Image (tube, rainbow, N blue to C red; front, side):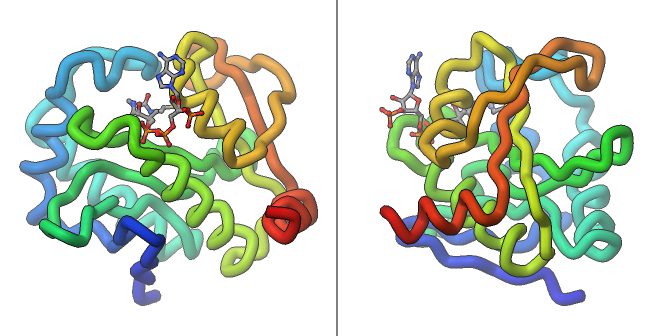
Amino acid sequence: MDIPTLCTPRLLLRPWTPEDADRLLGILQEPDILRYFPRTEPWPSEGADRYIAHHLSHWQERGCGHWAVVTPADGQVVGWNGLEFLPETGETEVAYLLSREVWGHGYATEAARAALQFGFTNCSLDKIIGLTHPENVASRRVLEKCRMALIDRQFYFGIELCRYWVEREEFFSQAKGG
Ligand SMILES: CC(C)(COP(=O)(O)OP(=O)(O)OC[C@H]1O[C@@H](n2cnc3c(N)ncnc32)[C@H](O)[C@@H]1OP(=O)(O)O)[C@@H](O)C(=O)NCCC(=O)NCCS
């Protein structure tokens, strides 16, 4: 499939290219960016290449995946956002990570909403989950602003995470209601 590019009011969500690896690695080296991830150690230099290759094939297998998040004014990649299928549980997760340079502008929420809309409209998903470390207040807030509901705490990737979800009908009824 041709991976789609989405335009949100302030962002471009476009397919990853191998040339983005250095920039992604730079973002992943920012202080505390991985603080709430199951693995907090810095990625090895080939980690970004592997991430990009993984998501390019995930798109082909699943019809969804992560996009590179770009600020259109300067064409700069500022992070990732998108959907990932979790084979262990059969769930699909919305995920996001942004450079500290752009935190606090509502970008993660804007991108996550676009990913949710894409998953329900283009991938026929009935439910999408969000997983976050209990202390990751910013991420929990993003999920709440997407009006995802906190369901429980479950072990994923070896650590206990808060699990949120939203179902398709709920997502679109909220979207209509504003
Ligand atoms: C999580 C992350 C993507 C949020 O990006 P962002 O673009 O700043 O998010 P938004 O601006 O859309 O929303 C963040 C919300 O959290 C709030 N917030 C941020 N830090 C907070 C804190 N320490 N305490 C309370 N609220 C906080 C913001 O005020 C905002 O809520 P508001 O709009 O109600 O004011 C960003 O912090 C990030 O990339 N972190 C590192 C990677 C990561 O943890 N990803 C999530 C993995 S589950």
